[in-house]
Image (spheres, rainbow, N blue to C red):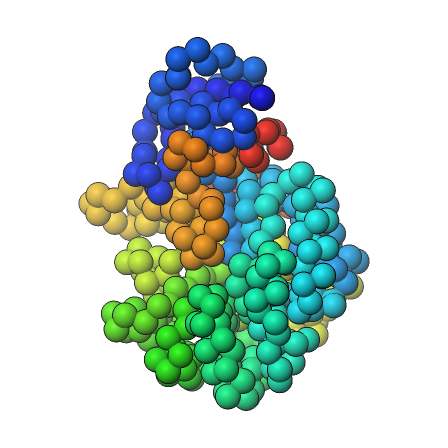
Length: 433
């Protein structure tokens, strides 16, 4: 049994209300003690975390690993390595692989392939409908047995509301969570930028905010009828967040996340048709972005995710409208969450809440709670998935600095704070810088 002592670190464990200097003692892949060493403890390895933050490993609610089917864009090996470099120890992957994750065998194969990598824990979402075609439901019970933690349509909306209602009724019967990205199947279809003055000036077809809000109204009506638990993925608008705030106040069992890029960028960041800023949903107005930041603060937004979508050069280095949407995010999740905390601390120095702990919570404990997975906590007895990082160290985002096979992000060339020094998975040091 291997033992590990992480000493002198600033421990931030939002799930257990810890934010201060504490040592961590690990044995047999689990947290053995916090604070002082148990009697007779001797460490095989001692890690000095002086000046560093020790937190639970990050939990990412949306990371496309591109396997099976899109290995030319990325592989499990490259993306799980990127996860470790970004301090991510658990990640949820959407079902839009090729073939789609609609058969238990495919899910088992993916879980097996991920396990043999000995890197981050992979939690697949099963397809809600066969082939994501929105016609017939998958065998959710069998997919859950194979290892799915919820059911999603990825970017494929269900046109037939009856099918969505049946899916939600089925999910509710068994206590499954349905993960939906709210988008109307017709309004804004084929649009590539946020509908607004900027898209008009650039001559780009638009995706209006009501594409999101109409879908939300529909989802909430179906939730009232089915009582199904729904997680809303990558909310992008102020109007959408208002509806979610009201739904939560009403007591509907709903949670939501935002893509970490949307916490910082707006449609103005398209600049001169920069294909790296082509994402789904599109970057919206400054008012929408400010609402996302406020929603993270007041708890309307439950978590931030990387929305990691690696795209290869052949599909990205094209005119804006033809470029594949998507950006690399696994290695940026921590830094962009810290950037939100820094901006918040500057804007509201008198607020009193500890912004660093708030940011860590949104990418650890809160995300794990949404996904319903045993992660994001360093309580005694929990699996020792840990991220050790230097919040003040700065790095420049470049192709060379990213382990992911996808080198495209709107943050290329930016200098960000927060460097992961070590990632520990199940008590083993899986990555050390």
